[in-house]
Length: 582
Image (cartoon, rainbow, N blue to C red):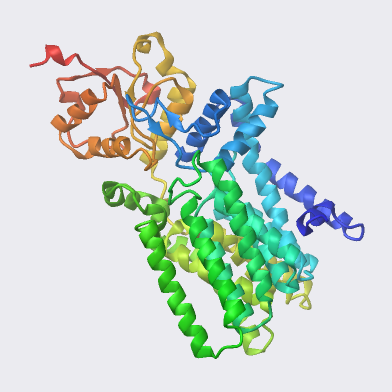
């Protein structure tokens, strides 16, 4: 039997014209909005401000070259020793390498990987937009509500940023899976259907495989399901057991695709750690359903509290510090000096209040309307689900910007309930409300200061131009093998040139990343030690963005290499033979 999402994509005869129209609007919008990007790519001038995307390209290229699924070692990283690149899961690597391999029958493999990586986020933007419409399809939406959801999603500035061409970090897949997950969860909640419980669990496992952060969505949804099953008695406990057992089985299937050894311990990638936690939760629910269903409330509460304490103690005994999540076993130096400077870990309020309000506006309006429905006793269970999901994910986003990818789609769906219920107002009012609500995040965001600094933009543009013109491939650098550059630029250099580098922004290479940070923070003697120890040939710096504490121009062990004026903000140095230096 076809899944509800596949049925939606096939379209029924009654609504086929509307959905064809929606499909055409989506495709035309994505084509027009990316036209300049397509032109730049054809002319070889396109790049993205996302170092992780280029690291994914490097990893996918390595898989296409080695054909070894579990080979995550790159000898050009953490030069001269090499480093593990298993900082991201294999699902995105498989998606990139698989598409490139198919296109490779018609063009060189490197070109195939670039082309596929360019169009893949655009394809998923369309899928995610249609998934948004499919989610509300279960709630008998009006056409007005559907067009609002489509326009609000496609024109949302935060969603736009995750679906740029070539931005093949896992976010494009994660957002799409999260939307589909909420859609299946809604249908499972409405029908209490075992088949839907299984499908929902499968989608949840794919989301967790893509990023371990997805497990938080699972816990949030489980809290809601437990409430309506154990307290409200509106969902059979057997359905929850089926959901958890299916999820556990999917984890068992997925783990060998990530780890050569099934019992390998990892906290930031799906592993035996997360499977063990899930199995213990499943066992707890089974015991509760079998033994405590008819007991008093006090006995149930005591059992739940004792069970949670036991789970915590057992997990911490088996996997010390598991409660720290992905940051467990991360080098303490990186926790102090690397993660705090990443913008995605900032609260939006710490960046700009207008940025925070642009994120919060949909939630405030949608939650306010839900409160009105609650006072009117019209707040249905599906709306309660979206309110709970919106509240929790928005609260996480207030603490840390990186959760905006989960919060924004849910907040759009939450506001769409208000848009549906103004169907009996005048056409002009609905048109005004449509335009205002669709453009509201962008209007508020336009008041925020540009947190992408001018020096950073200049450095990135000149760096890409340098690589695009193959300046570092000129004969004068033929004998050079190792180059030091800030970790922000490492992945693009690794992808575009044969040079070995010290670090990318991946904590799985702690020593390389520490040396990359220390070089800019330390004195000349220690910086020299890093360069000599790693046998670095060239040092490439952009002082207006990242300056060193010492002056490289005055360092006797460095010789400046002249650069063309189009790279005027960059400085290139060659390590001087220290045997000739006193």
